Amino acid sequence: MAQSEVNSNDFNFDNVDDLDDVPNIDELRKELEKEVKKTKQLKKSLTIAISEVKSQNETINDLQSDFNEVLKEKDALVKEVEDLTSTVHRFTNGRKMLDMMLGAQQRALDKRGIGYGANLSSYKKLLDDARRCSKCNRSHAVGKRALQKAKMGRLHR
Image 1 (cartoon, rainbow, N blue to C red):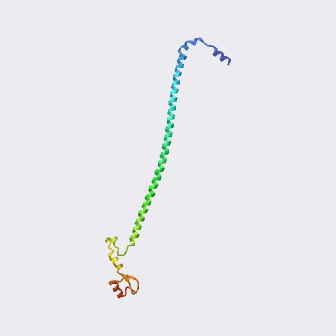
Image 2: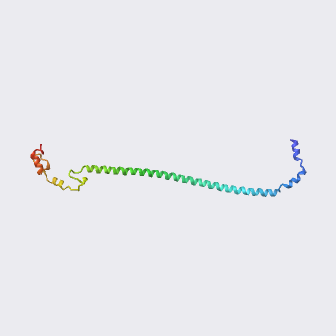
Image 3: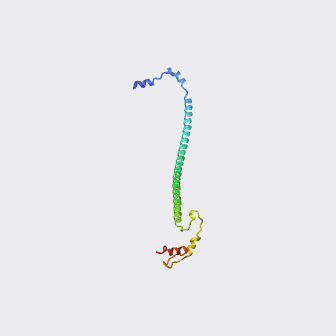
């Protein structure tokens, strides 16, 4: 180790010409300052870019949460529409069934559903002419035809 220290302490003045080729320390310092300024500017621009990316990520997250809320609301509305459609369908089917049941309860002489007009005058006339039968003591039509049937023994047995 002592030998290497001696070698490093021995300065050879023969290489002084090579020192002229090396740039001046002031020039090196100026170049270093320029590079430091460039590095600072790059660091600032990188910091700005990073903050922009962070704000864009926050915006994306906000938009994604809003999108998810809208999807949930859409699904709820679709389900509500389906429920309302089925309710309306059941209501119309129930109304058809009610109309059919009420239609089945028509009077015997009411022929409105089979192409005739609403002419109930003959039926009302029969009801108005109803009298009490002297044989059975019930109210029923005692007209000419009924009397003929009674004579033949078909009405009261």
